[in-house]
Image 1 (cartoon, rainbow, N blue to C red):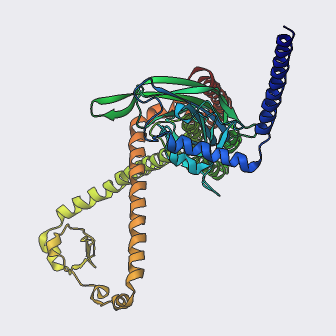
Image 2 (spheres, one colour):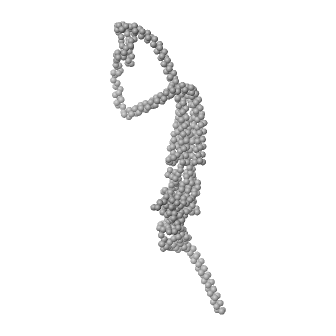
Length: 535
């Protein structure tokens, strides 16, 4: 019995020592695996990769859950810079880190001491990865200086993290009817090029977007953004029709900063309109000294609006009118009507002056006619007496005297008799015409024109043609005014504008000083309230 107790005690002691040695050995091995040398860790990493990619029969051409449920790809963006937002080409750009991760059970590993496999871009050619692309992308590219900017991380549970740096140019359809008071929504859509929704699902990560604090745009301000995901038709086709795809999208809401347009376009146009109103204070005078000043001011303001508004390069080239176009047209109409107001008062003054000149001419003609009639009446009495005397003169008495007949150039007959002062009418056919020596003279001056150059002749002909055209226009205008004067002369004389022309002109200018600013202010209120709060 005693021997049995001693044997049991020995066995227990041996077991205790064995357990103690086992615990010490396990702690040592754990400590040894945690503090591995670089060479050992490199060896284990190479052995793990060889097993995952070669020994396990990994096929990079097949997605992880082939034949089963669709694989899920989680994406997010880290934006480093944005812009420009080009309204002429309707695109926007951003520079970002585009990150994706998915789970591939074929890449699980249980190597002690390896918490993550950090691999370079060359490893991407050996594993499966989703063929992600941007549905509305234009000219996106991957940064490759100094090497392709992308990397891969693999964790023991088979999570594959894939990151790359991209510059993305994406299409952004814009409605520029409120330009430059507009805000635009630009969407970035992400999906798979070859896999449908039955094979691949895209989802946003918990933090879908991060933007650097230094990100800013020249003409826009990023007000906010929103994300969405969709499973439906993306526009890609198969032989059976439109494909059902899984996509995610992020919408950027841009608000345009109007500081540039206010300083460069709106303010100068408004000041030009104000300058056009100065002509209302250039008072009409009898001598017309204000005419050159008002004409030059009106023409200058009109041309300035045309040059600044319609000739600007900062406007988008669209087929419809924008808010800026409407404002330019309003300013152009304001300065144009100011010039028309001066033209109206100048026409009134010119019309009345010409009418008064026409009245004086008509009055002079009337006086001349009356004077001519009185003179004709006085001349008729001696002519009647001479005719009576001629009737008593016989034909024989007229033959006895020599009569000298001299024909003048106009065909009138002069009868001179030294003895008889009787005037008898003689027919034109009986006149003896003589050729003037001046008509017989041959002019030698025409020969001098043969040596004139052709260019000088063309200039002379052109100037003569312009002179004739201007004379024709003046004659036409005069004839029109003459007809108006003849038709409405009784009414014009009785008008207030005829007797008080300057008072009417002064009153027109006085009303223009009040109405033009008032109407322009009302138009401004309607314009800004409509485009800011209504449309």
